[in-house]
Amino acid sequence: MTEDEDNALTRPQRRLLRRLYNGRTEPIVADGKPFLTYKEASRYLLSLDAEAREAAYLEMKRQAG
Image 1: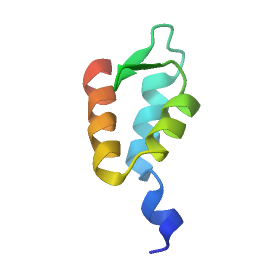
Image 2: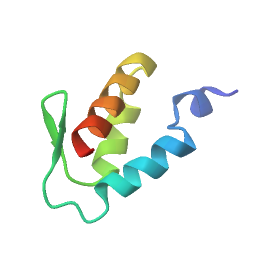
Image 3: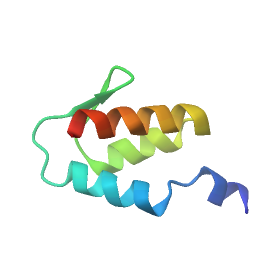
Image 4: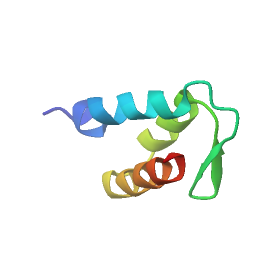
């Protein structure tokens, strides 16, 4: 596995994020930052290390559900 693949979001993560942010009018807040679009959320998640990324992803998932 290359470093890029290791830092990428998994396919299920990308799919869920796209569903969560599709047509969203109210932002989801993770780590005190509001995210309204898939691109904002994925860009933020990719800037984090693996452990922090998973925690932020789960927080986004929890808030949307």
